[in-house]
Image (tube, rainbow, N blue to C red; front, top):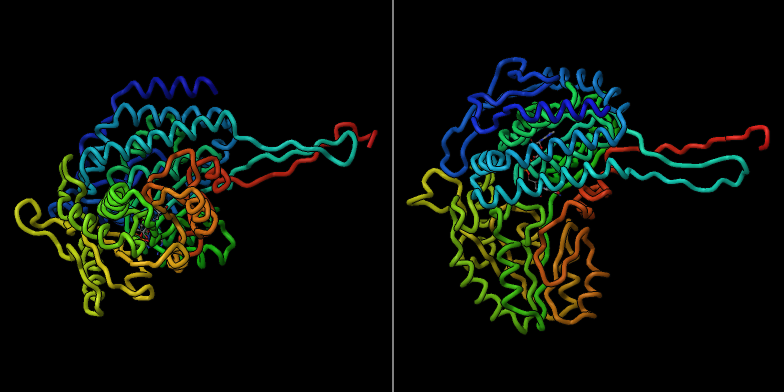
Length: 505
Ligand code: NAD
């Protein structure tokens, strides 16, 4: 097994190139880069300009069938390696990613329109996830326990599931790949990544590096294409043991139903409408700073975006004025000194602006923003002005649906009781934050908020690779990604009894 790793290291010294964008981004199935089975492609559009960057393999059921076939063939040998060896190979991917971090970040920046600085941050988070998971190869704890019977041992170990179908969103593309691919592979599964159609490039680069790192042929596959054409067949395929999905509630619900029919495991990481509470004793400037980050960073394209800002009456006017003023100073563009870039595609932009228009028509006040940015530097791109609304009812459509854009809503609340009630009155339960200097209030918030993540005096976003992430209600189906908890997603348990002295039992 060591030779594998050394061989992987040697291969890594070779010259992989992820700097040149392929004219047609291929699928990577069984160690080969291939076009879609029927030869079709779709255009990947640059969200910063509206122009075509490249073509991408437009996969269908035939490609998925081929991918599952090679994955099923390759998986047993991968599972038969020790988990330490699998961890070593994954560490090699992480090291290659570090070596090529600038090139990966360039691809992320190109395909999303975000700044290179943000793309580098995301790439580093993905690399860190790789190192964290690789280290789990040396832990991979099970459980040993007592038996009621003498001369009998009892223990629990992890076992792989088989083929993992991984489907991701485009918002933080390389991190989304890393969060699923590393733990799925460590646990001994073969993994098929259906890349987000808006971000094929970073997913392709990961596939190149995985192969270079020594992941055996067929163990890691990347397929490109649209959800209904390339994602759905993966969900429906009887050879896929787990579907791990990051995306919208609507698609998540369909996946749960479809995979549920054959009782396949599903891990669903879905949307959010995350509250940030500003109390009367908050450090208002700090609350403004974190609200800006929560609402607008990454153009609001975060499941953990702060999209409902609940402000105590006593500080509402001051907070609103400071927030609006700071928001008007934000710079939108693709440069490192800009605060955020475009949203990922034209359809998303149109939908979120239509939602703002509907809210306006039913009485909401748009304090700033509410429109597409045009003019020098913006022409053709999908740039949305940072938008703040007020006078929105808690049951209005815009209060209860996720927009996934740089749009947030202010709500005036009387006191803590009203704030916590409104915060919890949501179809979602992903993240939440409170700004207060009162320890008891903070602790009460932590206890009573119904969310997967709770933050005191910070943003609604900002997860770490060693910490579990996920949400309640329609934000997910109970699993957690990242942290050692991700291993629970991609493995099953085996309970073992050994009668080591049968004659004496
Ligand atoms: P989406 O559901 O439209 O698409 C996500 C992925 O699913 C894409 O790869 C798409 O091709 C695929 N897909 C679409 N229809 C499919 C189908 N019928 N079968 C199989 N696959 C299908 O979501 P989006 O708008 O691209 O992403 C934004 C959503 O992702 C938001 O709701 C956001 O909150 C969520 N998200 C959640 C997390 C989390 O960890 N909870 C993280 C990031 C994003």
